[in-house]
Length: 84
Image 1: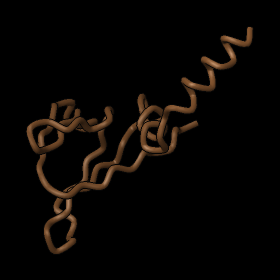
Image 2 (image 1 turned 90 degrees about the horizontal axis):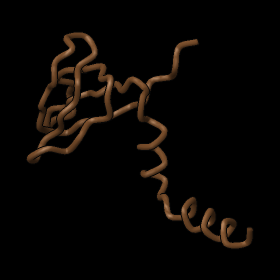
Image 3 (image 1 turned 120 degrees about the vertical axis):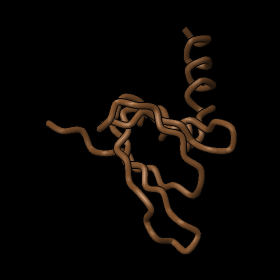
Image 4 (image 1 turned 90 degrees about the vertical axis):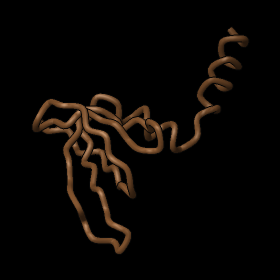
């Protein structure tokens, strides 16, 4: 029993806040906003997946079109609240 307790502490203690945020975002819609160099919004997307870093950019599935989108640049990702 003591072994399981120690194992649980090691497992749960090894996650950083960013890891926890990523885990909590899985399965939830994401709002992805792409910004230009001067800080203006270029475009916003709603994604059904957490963006993945691919070849210097980001890839995700767009909720509106159902297609995979690849973008490069400065983005902000927000996890949207679940609808009840």
